[in-house]
Length: 176
Image 1 (tube, helix red, strand yellow):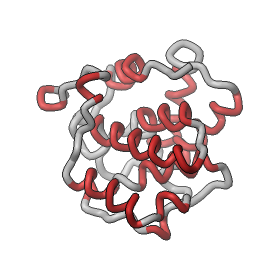
Image 2 (image 1 turned 180 degrees about the horizontal axis):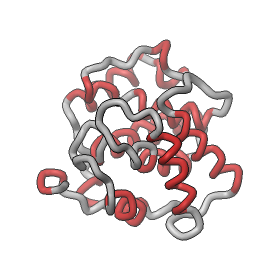
Image 3 (image 1 turned 45 degrees about the vertical axis):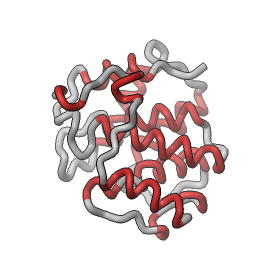
């Protein structure tokens, strides 16, 4: 059963110190989710892990600039939510935890779900003016020029997926 991302987002945003509309905020998480779901169609990644990674991976950032420990903090935060905000098997939770903890400093991983999570995030670099480079992506799907072009265009134009307001209930124009 898919986790209720709206409830998880409420827990995340309760004490999220950065602007919700910032470089690492809600619109970024939503694009990472869309990127991850698109990639998972071809990589076969665990979709529930990808969904949770999207909303949790930057959830414990305390700076828009350098914050090397935000990934491990996000993994610890996910641990605190497990069992009441979402349920994953032990194996799935290990994947989520590793994906969150390593997403900023590890280059690749043998597991396709973790690779898909990291590529979903890496494909959204256009939001900070960086074009994703195929050599820095893990999966063959993410390295394809059409996928990079699609994701980078959305990131550079700060596309906010409709589900942010419709399903998540977050209006970025008026939020933190």
